Image (tube, rainbow, N blue to C red; front, side):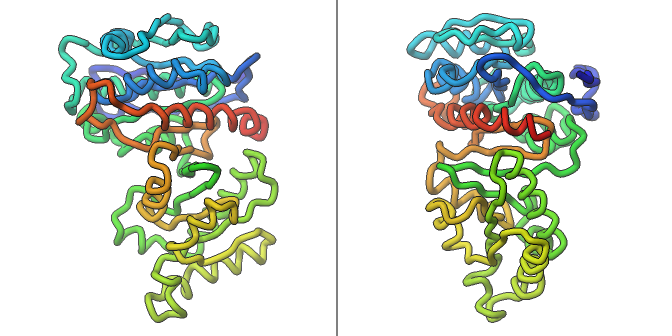
Length: 363
């Protein structure tokens, strides 16, 4: 197996806290899949939901979860929770036993617990968040975990700590040397992809171009095949109300979207659309499509989160490994209060577990 190169976080260097990793090999583990779980921002709800999720039978019953975080933060968080958690530090995910009631973690010891302000943006919390991501990617590319599930981070905190990347996905892409990974939302079996992510609405509309749609749908089909869907049916959402009503309400459908769909159909792909956005997601939830291509960030986010906020999982495809994530933020307003809902992280770990084997074999 080829080993990856990895540059660790340095306190003295805040120029670019993510260095590309190269040379990933196929991941192999024996027994249950090993899932690397990041703690997320230590000042947010990440530590709490990580403890709750990793104590759940729904998680340890299907995989060996290994948390990447800070033991001091976790122990202080656990004092407020019931049932109480037991922790065991391991040097490598390969040393994990996956024992019920025991949270095994790689302790990076990078948070001053006494100085940490829970519920506040800080350089220290942002720096720690970045390092957890770097470390779990190192483990994934070296084959020590089969998939990755990430806890929530705060964009302001990681920017304060010097990251050039706006969020998780961009950071993961840089670490893996991948130019443009795909984001997929999984919500009760429905799969939603995104033509654009973090763009303003004006910029997102400008990005709705035939070639971009064709290229994205081609990539979606490849990634769906890697997770076992041989001939996926992909619906392309409309941009304008009523799919423009034959050009009465906007012209992007006629100029860009319909020509893209015709080109994809000519290549033998199963593609339909443009389907009005007020019906396409409902049909997907009923099993009418294998996937939907949402044309901009909120078009798909609103639909998924309205249907099941805590049941929505973000999946990053196109990396050398499966990565899933909670689809909510750090929730600073309830951090440290013991009331955070761990369901999204539980489902994220389960989805990562289910996808990991087939995806790894297809790479």
